[in-house]
View (cartoon, one colour):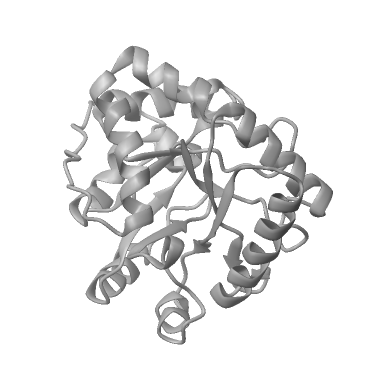
Length: 256
């Protein structure tokens, strides 16, 4: 298995605190059947500004230590990019790149507030050849309140990455229910760990993927194939359909 979203590099964001934690995370991943991990430290302007070339260096150091400790998991470079009005500028400056230097870019939004400028920024990124992957949509409050909010991003052919922990209930019932609904609608192109530590948010995929396998074998097979395609920068056929709107009731979130 391949994990495309993991905060495993030591001491550079809110993930692994030191090299010992990183090595323990790698061992947990190996035991779970994961053979490759894309390290995706945050690039969040003003908070964690992990530029791509710095990530590459950290990945090289971690791979060296993993080899010395007989851990058979390969780490590859990536970033989880908090989308804002500087994202395009930073991309053109070379600070940001896609996962493993491919055209697929992992992006995230505010958990609480709908990102009103996101569609315009995504449009500009796509003109540069970028294919956006929206990280953990099931955790965003506005998506939990109204799944159809994602239709604008489906229109832009954005891909969607669900967290394994959402599917297994680590992030609570709302995130779990939302993730299962998105799986039901086929709004799921990747499942990743989004691991930050060795505890509750550790790098595990098997349980979540088996849950999907038991519900929809063809989706499971697509997810496995898509992760491999990212590593090779291969084309991923876009098949996601818009979510049909349901009748809204008083108190349900409405986009302004």
